[in-house]
Amino acid sequence: MYLISSQEMLKKAQRECYAVPAFNIHNLETIQVVVDTAKEMNSPVILAATPGTYSYAGTKYLINICKTAAETHHFPFALHLDHHENISDIKTKIEAGIRSIMIDSSHCPFEKNIAIVKEMVDFSHIYNVSVEAELGRLGGQEDDLIVDEKESAFTDPDAAKEYVERTRIDSLAVAIGSAHGLYKGEPKLDFIRLEKIRNKVDIPLVLHGASGIPESMVRKAISLGICKVNVATELKIAFSDALKQDFIEHPDANDPRHYMQPAKLAMKKIVEEKIRICGSAGKL
Ligand SMILES: [Zn+2]
Image 1 (cartoon, rainbow, N blue to C red):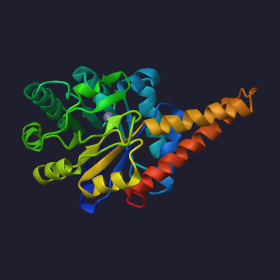
Image 2 (image 1 turned 90 degrees about the horizontal axis):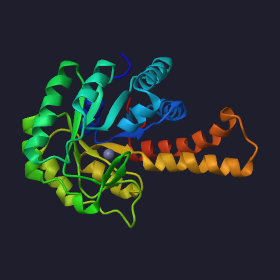
Image 3 (image 1 turned 30 degrees about the vertical axis):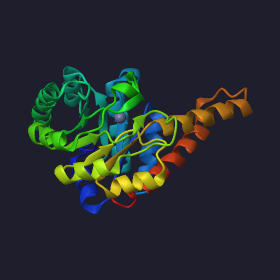
Image 4 (image 1 turned 180 degrees about the horizontal axis):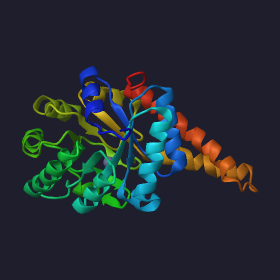
């Protein structure tokens, strides 16, 4: 089995004090960049895709490209459902071969959030699928999910303890000041809150919206219990900027096999840097 759950890799990261990077992928080229680079650096890795990406690329296409990549490299990794909300959609994707999910009910009131996530955990654990859920609410935009700054809310440490106990999730996404998309000013993370959550919750913690957070802050978050670091925006920007630049320099370019190369290289540099910051190189 090459597409694996995130459970074991995150527990190992927690024991050994590093984080597993989760990179959002969109197509064949971005999958190749992440898998090739992680394999070269012997880093455990999670490939994440939002509902929009599964719709764009097709669930079976994504699963089969990832399976082929994993088998070719003899390199098991997790293909993850990022910010999925629809239970029947998640069940269909698990039945198609996904083994790592995030059910995002963070927009629901506490009791409803628990009820939805618990139902998803009961189903997922039958298939040995790892489940991540979010308490509190991150601001910013991810896919079609847009959360206004006013609607964002930090994770309450006591509520987190109750949430984890009642839902039996495998990892918890915390809202401690990070946001999806680009930061307007310097990002601020609430490390005191993170430490309080860590003291009350013993499962791996997840940092969303890590694009644009300085290295020192990400490292500090990892030292305080973050075991999974999500990166999406920085990869998209590097890939797209290099592609645009290549077309400026070669306006007649018309061969995707050529003009995709600089884009892949630019994205690879970000993947390498994030693996280094997460401390996950050599941890396979
Ligand atoms: Zn996220």
